[in-house]
Length: 110
Image 1 (spheres, rainbow, N blue to C red):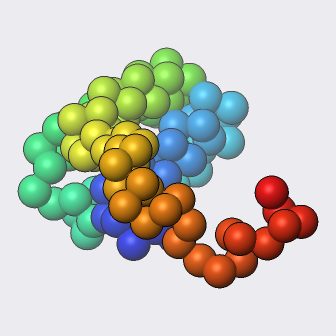
Image 2 (cartoon, rainbow, N blue to C red):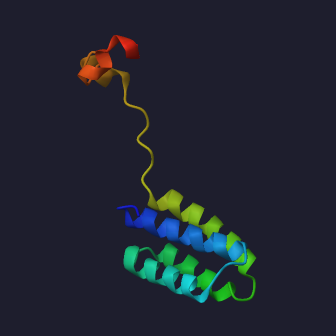
């Protein structure tokens, strides 16, 4: 599992959503989802709200509840995870001569 509680919760929620959409959702999966939200992201109100919404609808319409959980999870992760810093600027590699390790100078790798 990830060391990031946000990623760990996201993976758990994604698993539960897919189980709901495929008709494989068990009571234990619902409990595990609620537990992971409380343990890993207790301060995230959006995560808590999406879990409560899912748990409120998954018994009646599990497929639709799973699909909505996936949608909400995507929106929440876009907000909760920091943006990708992007590629390393060219100036940094130029300072090192483009070589960081000795093995990068090997002729067979050029």
